[in-house]
Length: 253
Image (tube, rainbow, N blue to C red; front, side, top):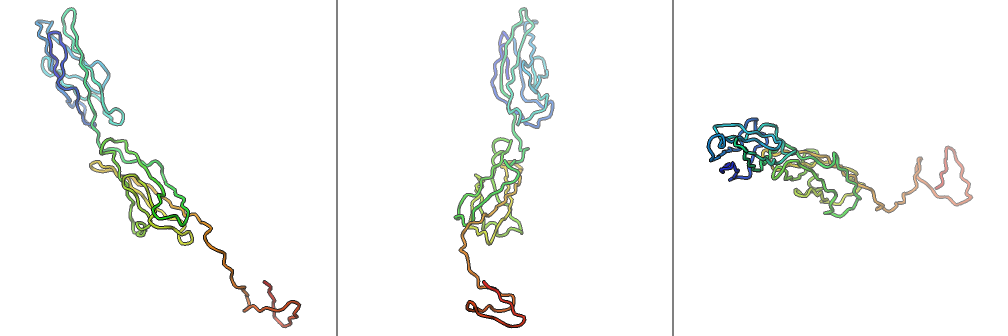
C-alpha cells in the first residue's frame, strides 16, 4: 500500500491481501508507505487503523509501516476484513486521507465432515426393484473450496463382504441404491457404514451408520398341511362308526 500526495492522500496499488488463518501474532501482511511533500511538521504523517480488526500498524522507519496480525483469526467466523487506514499530517489545519482494502483469511482443512443425522434408518419393502434409491445421506463441511468438497463411500469390512453386491452409493450425491431385490423371508435387516471424505490435504473424514429394515409384504399364498397325529397316522372313519380298543385316542380334524 502506498500513501502519496502533497495532502497525504492514500493511493493503493493493491486492494486485496491474503493472510493464513493460523498466522502467528506479529506476522506482517503488507508494507505501508506514507509520503507528504510538504516540509516541516506539515510533512510529518501519522497512520492508524480506523476500524476494529485483528490487525495493527507497526512503525518501521520514518513513514513506513507494517500491517501485522494482532489477534486470533477464524476463517469460519470471518473470512475477510475490510481495513481502513487513516493518514493525518501535523499541519494546521491537519490534512487527512483514508484508504480501504480487504484482507482475506485463507482456509485450512481443519473441519471434518458432519452428517445431517447421527444414524440413518431406511425402511424398505421387500421385492423392491433393483436400482431404487433407498436413501440420500448428506454431510456438511464448514471449510471452503476443495476443503469442503465431499465424496461418499461404503466402508468395507470382513463381516459384510456381500455388501457391495447389495447396495451402491453415488460418491458425489450420497444416493444409496439397491443392487438386488430383497426378500423378507431371507433377510430382515442389515447394517453398514458410509464415509464422507473431504478433498483437503490431508483429507478429513467422518462415518455414519445406515440401518436397512426390510418390511414384509403379503406375497406368499396359504399352504394347507396334512393332518398331524401325535400317535401315528390318521385314519378316516364314517360318521356314527363305533370305535373300540384299548389305549386308543380319536382325533377329529
